[in-house]
Figure 1: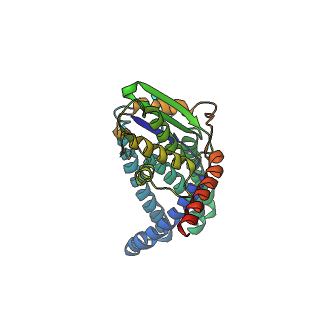
Figure 2: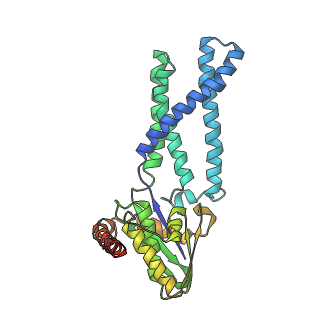
Figure 3: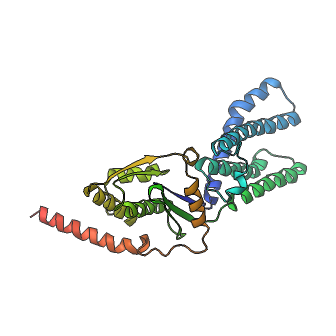
Length: 298
């Protein structure tokens, strides 16, 4: 059985935070590497400005090229270059998403750097336009490549079962992953005695492995933990395997299903979502614990 959740959420806040980090890294690289090299070269002011700008650009472009090649190989775009359009819009992995965010952050950090580096007025406009153009182009390719939604799919080859859908947009990705685990367990509990759950969410699997929850645990996680414990008591064997990146497993069918669900015009009408179930369940838990505590102190 394979199941995955995919989403594409705007990362405006992340881009801003990473741009501040890039400013700090730029300053450290400038002070401890470029400045020491430039002092030994005894450059003039004009050549020094060119050296500093070219030095940091060289390092950034080198990292970007190596990172880009690594991402292309990981995503199997070579030699299968046709996957760029045949699987569009495809799920984006964490490393690929981080690559886009770093590119955006670097372009954004160049704007305050113009002031910090005391760029000449006649050069200010040209460099600012260049940075803004790069920022806009990368933003278009990143933010518009996938809709802001969460899709899910359950694929059970042994049962020839394929389920896909779209979660409500307010659902967190962790909640979505937990829900689909519970959905899968419910579907297969009466038909398969041994199940291996393959997921790219290590945190979700760790929560389920621990099997513990408290008053602050979200309702979906509580229900899934209870469901897993119930099916195990009935004699079913369920194991979880963490797969860090999608390209290393055969998930083409699951990927197609997830995209199909994610692109649906309306999210699934899931009764008893986390916002509806949590208040009543939380109240019930506290009542049970208060009664247990009262009995223990008598």
